[in-house]
Length: 118
Length: 116
Image (cartoon, rainbow over all chains, first blue to last red):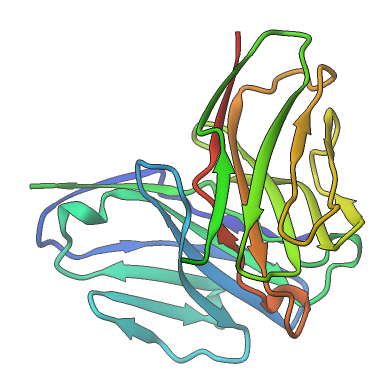
């Protein structure tokens, strides 16, 4: 069975600080996909990134960067120079290439609530 | 603009009543999903559908029902059999291109259901 753990329930940082959100996953598959979503106070989940298990290159998009390490089963997310608009709940999720009756199912972590204080 | 719409945004229901949540997408996606979110929790899958007139149970399907008569629409009915229906409900869709877990799911704005 697949599992995603986000150990940090809540994080508070002062604006312009860097912050890293941790995500650790468990899966028995060799092919799988990892996702990060942002949920602002409005409630809608906003897709941020998808990585497949064969691509361990780190990715940078503006102030966002992702560090994927298969050796530690981690897919961490860093926000550089945080801003108040980054305040949200961030979810890490995992999908296996094929999981039988649960095909296409995303398994979510419980989320990390980030508060950026001005 | 392409996207996913859910209505209503807030819904109040008396105990013992069935209620239907709407989800429509104009992204031409094949697959649609319903998730439930409780405070401080991640999302849990209720039902999903990969094609019209077909759907599968997720982890917490008891007390819920769905239909998929049109590609664009995937309504969720919360029945009186659902013991604790107060929650935030999110609908999602994905293109189901290459298939399997590689498809990115895109979410609607959600419906907050409160049972009085």
